Length: 231
Image (cartoon, rainbow, N blue to C red; front, side, top):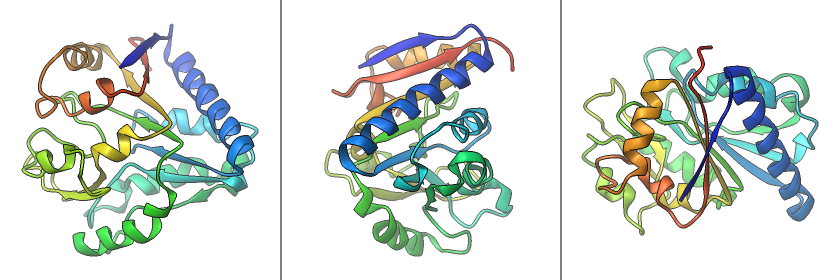
């Protein structure tokens, strides 16, 4: 299920989610000694990451992962990890352990092996932040991917390669069970088009038509952070 939180403007949205995520990370570190945070790529979460980088946390006890990654992108700036690294390798968060899901030169098979070695020991996730596309995909769970059924299955492997016809590169992604098993989950959306997509996704329907439903309709509660204000 999901809880919808609307913010008055873009700055309030980004600061609001940063504060909530920081509080949850601090609580987990206090309880367990370490915490994991998984974040998306793309342009929408960048201001959130920038604000999060300023939060007073025990960053040396926090591991930051990416939810999905492009396989051998033609441009390194299309790498989700490179974007995350740009914003978190500064300020207070420079002490965090930032872990790529795949090296930019790795093939899909090599990326899967790397994920199993690097990410699998850190599961289940403590805090998860996701974005959503207008097609209602989340992470790299695209509606048009032939592998989608397998990635949504309860017994899906933790990581899969997705071949979406709508995307220029193959993707490696955390699968639905990994996303659903996160202790705390957040969905970050902005703009009227994303709100319209969210309203469709929160209604009953096939998860294959709107993969973000794997989070919105799971047993765990996802906080949906939204503003309709322009950046």
